[in-house]
Image (cartoon, helix red, strand yellow):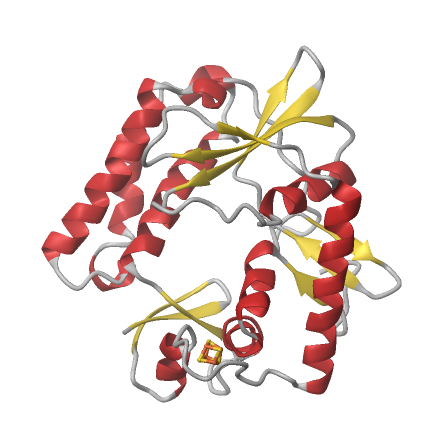
Length: 278
Ligand code: SF4
C-alpha cells in the first residue's frame, strides 16, 4: 500500500468502533492473525450475510452508466450473490432462517427498484491507487502516520451545484448511533480525495424507508480532532500491546476467542480473512 509502512496506524469506522467498545475486541478482529494461515479471523452470521448481499448488489450498480443501471434485474443479481452466501457460508443454521433473511434482502431491493431516487442519477466514485487494496484512503496525520480508510456505499452527483450526496445503506433494524463518526469519516475522505463540495449526507434505512434520510452535515474540524484522539490511543495500544479486557464480562469478544480456542467451524478463506461460524 503506497504512503504506508508497517508502522502506519490504519483507522476505519469499524476498527475505531471496535477499539472504543473494547481494546481486546479491536485486537482480536483487527490485529490478530492466525499463526498457521497468517490471516485475520472473522465471523459470519445471518445479519452480516444479508448486509453483504444487499450492499454487493447495489454498489455494483454505481460503476454502470445511468441508462444501463435500471435495465439490470437487481433481483436476479441478488440470487447470484446470495448463492455465494447460502448455508454455512452465510452463517445460517437452518433453511427457514436463511429463507427469512433472504426475503428481507429481497424486499429491500424491491424498495430500491420501486423508489430508485439517487440510484437512478449519475454517481461519483473515489479513486483508489492500489487495485490490491480497493478502499479509498488518505493520511489523516502525516506527523503521526495515521491512515484513514473507508468505503462509501454511494455518492450521487448533484449537477446543480457540482457537488456530491454521500449515502450509506443500512440493512439492519437499528439506527446508527447519533454520536457516530461514520458520516464525518466519509466526508473527510471525500474532501481529501476529490474536489467537489459535499451537498448532503444521508443514511438509507432500506428495511423501513423508501428514500435516504437526510442527516446533519458534520463539523469536519471537530470530527478530525476526535478521530485523531482515538487513532493515537489505538497507535499507543498497538505499540504497547495493551489490549486488556476493561470490563470482564460483556461477551462481545466470545466469537473470536471461540475461534482461537478451536471451538468455531471454519467456513472459507475470503480476501485477507479466515471466516468462521459458531
Ligand atoms: S468481555 Fe472484556 S475483552 Fe471481551 S469484548 Fe467485553 S470488555 Fe472486551
